[in-house]
Length: 157
Image (cartoon, rainbow, N blue to C red; front, side, top):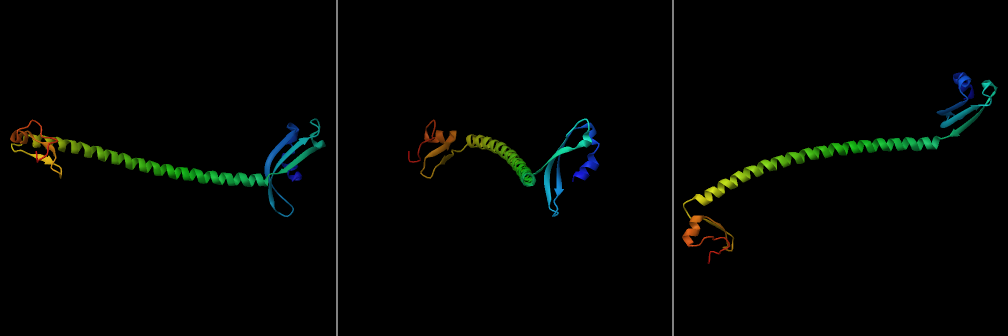
């Protein structure tokens, strides 16, 4: 490791007095570990005189970091999927709202036509509950039974 760093970064210490890097290293048993490597020259005037090196094994930290990254990616994917589902649901709800608005407009027009027809017919008409309570009656019906308003009356009355 030190020869590699010396060959690769030997001239580095001619302009800098501190080296700091995070890198994978191989142990003698060929197991890879992650380390923070820090080197500081002993003499800034003579950088080849020597350096102090500190190597810190951060493999466990790196494993945790990688698992955290994987979990974050999974969460981001899940959030993306949920966002798409929500957008689809919102689109469906908006379409349903539009359909209901149109149906309400049609119903209002039909209701207006019904009311006009109901009150303009030359025959007496009343709508009642099962018990005979009058819910609605047109003008001709009221004239026939001799009242101004037949609503809330009962057929027995």
